[in-house]
Image 1 (tube, helix red, strand yellow):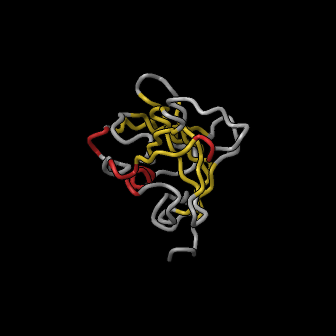
Image 2 (cartoon, rainbow, N blue to C red):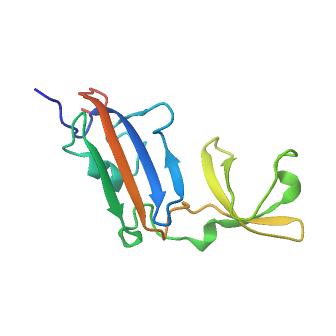
Length: 150
């Protein structure tokens, strides 16, 4: 019997997040596939929900609307001014570019440079896809039961 994806399933898959203008935000199709446990927090819950009931070999693309608030609400308090001197010396800081930052707790978070003025960069730490319609493409490679979340 073919295993279908449900809460706790270990899933090996490729995924792509692409904005409606065709700009690719993230993809594993040209790299190693992603392995995750459904319910383990690697994907936000609304995207995990789209995987439920799929099985190995399924290849789907979902139209995700900004109205669905998959990545939450926009929060003005997540926009911070950072001194340019605090960026790594070799890093070219450009408006519109997504950079990876490390929080004091050691977590990696993306931030988008909104503007540069007076030796400071205004960086938006809201998820870059908040407020955007996008396509969520997935190709399921393998599904197995997992005891991690049972």
